[in-house]
Length: 290
Ligand SMILES: C[S@@+](CC[C@H](N)C(=O)[O-])C[C@H]1O[C@@H](n2cnc3c(N)ncnc32)[C@H](O)[C@@H]1O
Image (cartoon, rainbow, N blue to C red):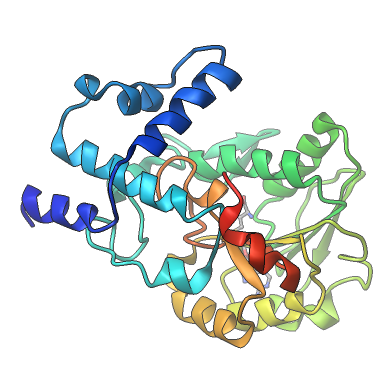
């Protein structure tokens, strides 16, 4: 693909317009005390990054931002992937993703390997701080680091949060707010304590990569509007996500505040940081800024 092809593809998403420029200027002044991020600087001062590919990328961001924060999965999934990584529908290259969990060793929490990308290592605390879930259900504990990490974050942020973390393998870890449960994701009804998601707001993190469609159906029965469902490493789960979304039209929206914070789908959760929507949310979906 030539540079022109890519620019044409980006152009199709709309103009990098005055509104985006103005929005950026206003945010920098009102919320950042006049201090620009690298990105802000490139938006407000074209001379900083005049390369046509970068300008085209900004146009694409402006068009995406104009869609609002919450976007139906079908809309996200149907985007022309030209200029994006084809499988991850992402602006982040394979090499960056491959290095994003660490090159010498994985990230760690409390001395345990934590299998998050550097992007998700930032996004999950942001989501926890905003949602303040009373209950987190993690499917796939690994060696327990991620559950301990989320429990420590909740404590740091100062909200009560009970975490249930399920794995087929035993987990040798302990925290007063974490219940490690040994069981099979293929039988969540049999494996999970009845009160795992008794109180909202709720966050479910699917990170075991088995029986994904069944897992999603099971948790769907427990989620209420405003709750969140994250499906990790979802590039390879697109058929299951598509089937689930088709079975529950309008029930979930992609929260692009998180999926696109560092560029489109700069996360292991490809279009799969989902907010459970209420019917009444539909009218406001597209007008909510991020
Ligand atoms: C990618 S690791 C989880 C990583 C962890 N959440 C983290 O962020 O550090 C996937 C986990 O899923 C577990 N797993 C695999 N099959 C499972 C099943 N059928 N039911 C429950 N857990 C399963 C594995 O034992 C493994 O610990």
